[in-house]
Length: 100
Image 1: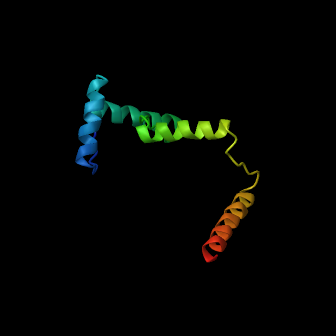
Image 2: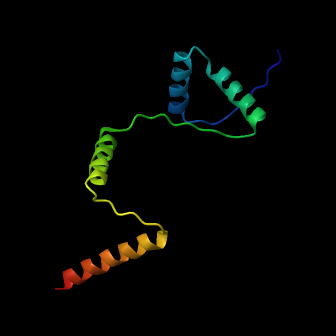
Image 3: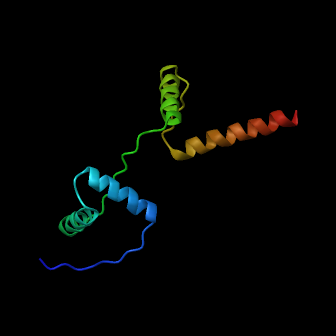
C-alpha cells in the first residue's frame, strides 16, 4: 500500500490526548485520521461531536431551571422582539428605582 505524508500543525497536548483516546479504542492516530478523511470524501460533510460530561455547576443549573419551569417562574416569548422589549422594560424599571 502506498502512503502519503501530511504535515499539520497541532497543539501538542491535543495530539497527546488524541493519541491516548485512539489507543484506548485500539487504533492509531493515523488510522483515525485516514478514516475521518475517507468519511469526508464519502459524505462531503464535516461532523464534530462533543461528548463532554456536564460540569457539576451545569447539572445544578439544569436542576434549578427544571424547578423554575415547574413552579411557573419562566417567561416565554413568541417573537424575539417581545423578549427584547421585556428586557428593555426591566432595565428602565431598574433605572427608575435607582433614581428614587
